[in-house]
Picture 1: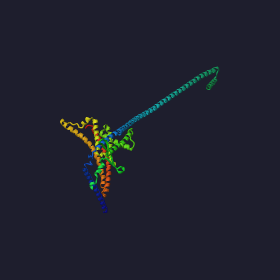
Picture 2: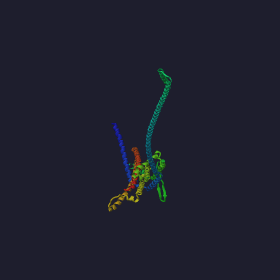
Picture 3: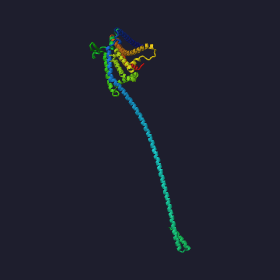
Picture 4: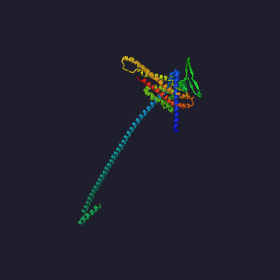
Length: 206
Length: 279
């Protein structure tokens, strides 16, 4: 109850202040308007024209415009345009460089791929060449061996023929000498048998 | 008592032009501005707004001439402050001027519109400085700025389309029968030309009203403090309330100072853009 009372009191105080402030504001404005009317527009900006201020403003503004145009805003506008152009040029340059680099990259990649193919082709060629050379070497070696073999066979055959011819010659010679011996001696069957036996022995001895 | 709550002359002194600066005592107190003798009977009374305009012009020169030197070589500006200035310039150029006029036609107008924006902005902001004021809260200033804009709009249109064609194009092409055309076309021409003038007059009034009204409201709120000074039980509440409101309104005024400079420049760019093409 006491709280409510205190609240009411504070509210009443606030309301009183607000009311007084409002009254003061309203009466102040009213007084202001009344005095303004009495003075004939003391607070009316449309009634307080000053030609000297207008001329001064004209001169100051035009001089300021001239000075700023020549020394500040003219150069600044140009500099900003130039900077924008430079940035645009740089962006275009960078884009061009990027495109060039991409093209170069693809060219290099193409070259790399080409050289990889070339390398594998060279390797394959080398292999094929090596294989054919190897096969040639083997074939010629085989041919040489075969030739040697045939030569050896021929030599053996020749040697055998020689030996046989020599044997035949020797046999004939022996037979001739034996026949001579037989013819020289009269021989009885036992001698005959002994001669044959001697001849056979001699033959086997040779 | 309530009739004297707000001293109108005090409020008017805060928002209107004056021939003096009213500073605190430690800063020199009341300083009367000189009345310069030019020739014969011709005098130029220097006013508070004239000094503020001159200061605004000198500040702009001091800000942008070094910026021009910094970026002239093509390198970007270094440092937060210079970049901030550049952001303002680029925003105005790319988001206000180019879209309104068209990039191709806009180039010759960019320095003018930049100057217009920053001059109005600094004049607006003058009102946020203690003991100064907003020159843009004076019709003489806004009317001249709108007048210069009007000249640029018409001049730009005549240069682009040709002097005769520009005025001829004020009347849109219509298939009117002969007698009616003789009667109607001059009327349409007059309406178009007067309409264009009014648009520029509104440009001046809009800026003036915004700056003037804002500062009047601020001054009225602060005047409540002195107005209630005699009433001891009311004075503290009014003071706290007035200061709070003044603070909030000052923030709003700061925003309005930028907004109105932007709107003036944006509309000037739009009018220039419209004059570049026939109807």
